Image (cartoon, rainbow, N blue to C red; front, side, top):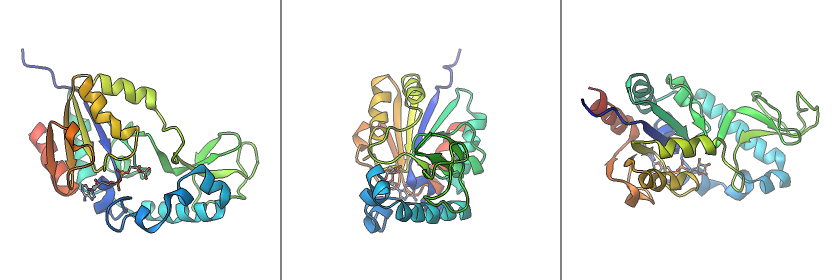
Length: 233
Ligand code: APR
């Protein structure tokens, strides 16, 4: 009897959406080379100047809404449809390009641009076109609206489910992430520890390239479809 197809756990980062026109964070010209993450991606920065933070996320949300999936997103949706061992897709990205490409059950560990969160009562609702700090929460009516994204110092979402997926993975694949932000940066080592093979698909070797058994370097829009074809065709 042939070996069963391993369960594949995939982690994506900003690099998979780079060719869709959405900036990355740490490349040359990346967002954190132009803005200070302490002002825009921490609860303290939001408390200091909620208007500035919300204006940044309004701008990012507009860019996300205008962006379209690229062949890398499409290839992962194809893999999810056809891989018999099952695929768990985890993303650090807060865009919805995986879903727009047809992926389902995407685990957004850093939240999503497309939802608003009430900082007072925890209620979540679809993000409006533009978000203002004075927007009343639809549930508690208090003016405590923020983007439903995970900032530095906050706990990423779905970590229990992610931990279970990593221990059950036969193959862990990291795509378009610099491997610098934990806990995501620790997933490759955790999966390997649990017996998975590990593969990195990235423009260039990431910070934790040493945790991967295999690597394919190049733009995601070419490397990811080629990798999926090598599995399915
Ligand atoms: N194809 C493939 N990889 C690419 C491409 C591309 N076209 N362009 C860039 N990359 C790679 C870069 O080489 C880099 O390794 O994508 C990675 C992007 O790294 P970061 O900018 O650090 O983005 P990411 O790893 O997703 O950041 C993690 O940091 O600021 C927080 O919450 C934010 O989720 C984000 C987290």
